[in-house]
Image (cartoon, rainbow, N blue to C red; front, side, top):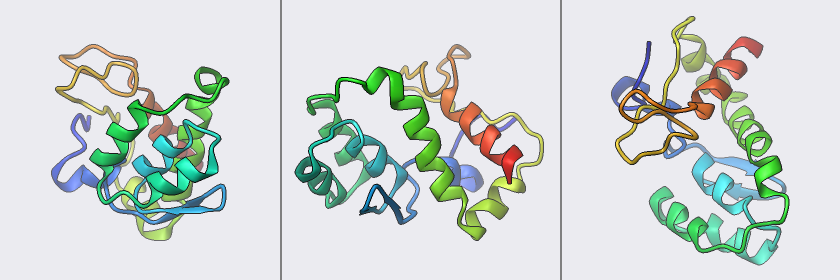
Length: 136
């Protein structure tokens, strides 16, 4: 089991540098793209794409007026964004190198939707990454 997206497995993190283009805008991490996707306001998306760090984008995402369908689409959005990242050959190879290990985004910030904290959580990001791994 890989239960921390740090060290040699840091590439699994949405904070890891990886340029992707999502819905016509270029982002420097998947975190940038995910946070921007929370709004349908193109100007806000462009603003988020220009923020320097993924931490800044996460904070900006907390202050967005969420699109009305966000709760219904956020899992698919995360899948689509991660699929873009892991469609790149170098990232695909790294993901495949994890074999059949369970991928768990262990964290200390109490995110039990995308990951697992203190052994509890839905681990939706880990599930998405394992799904993508099985597809490549």
